[in-house]
Amino acid sequence: MSSRASTFEIEPMLCKLVAELPDGPEWSYEVKWDGYRAIGQKRPDGLRLSSRNDKSFTRTFPSVAQALADLRCKSATVDGEIVAIGVDGRPDFQVLQSHRSQSPTLRFMLFDLLEVNGRDLTEFPLEARRLALQKILPPESNLLGFSHELHGTVASLMAQARAAGIEGIVAKSRDSSYEPGERSGMWMKWKAERKDTFFIGGYVPNGRSFEELLVGRRRGRQLEYVSSVRAGFTSIQKGKIMDAIRPLTLPHCPFSNLPETGKSRWGRSLDEEKMRECRWVNPRVKAEITFVEWTDGGKLRHSKFSKLIQGRSK
Image 1 (spheres, rainbow, N blue to C red):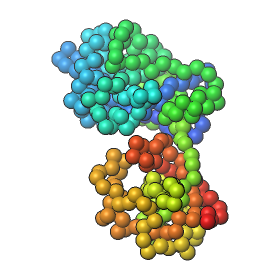
Image 2: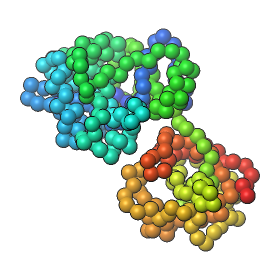
Image 3: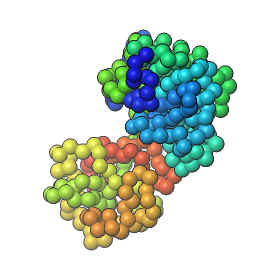
């Protein structure tokens, strides 16, 4: 057995982000679970749960770690995603972050087996590893689940993911070996992002351009801040945005729900200190923004610029 499977320092195999999933019988498809990637290990001398960066999750999620004892083998190293199931039956990352070990809806969705009873399986094909994983899972468990293969065309799976509001789909080569720490393209992920238009109400300057774009939505006559957008821009797009908003300078903040108070789970809060860096504009220009979901606090999660909406709104 190789040393990488005998230690607690396994690096998870990584997925390559793609805009379109590969199609063909050589690929299998699974739900992209919205949670914490984790490696679970059952050993004669104890149980361990760790993050993708090898940080201990054993005390963070003690019930999940303890559930590893129910695996029907003497030892094993499994790969999966710790998720929390929301009231609508879907994985809910906010519930997971809010409650951690106190959540009664935790599930460790397993999708790979790297080692069992001292035998290194990382060079075996994916399908063989998954069959071996199913054999050691307890017949009934409230905490350990199996990430089943999805069936259908790529187009239908992508459409179903969008309709169901799940984060995305993962495609894996059926013959792929397990490559710790690698993003070789044998595993690919596609995110089912949402899209909407929002008003630009300000920005964080960076020289003659900007570092972050502050966007909001209308609530009656008020403008509510929903996101600080940092991703998705090209230098040409930034220039066009600045040309559109530069004549709309305002001396005051147009957002009704700023400054924010308290620490944000999604990055630094837009508090009074951060607002001193901002420049404000009359919210008459719109931008199309893609995002994963709305948070409970009314903010966009994983927002990214898509395009500038031509013409100003009155």
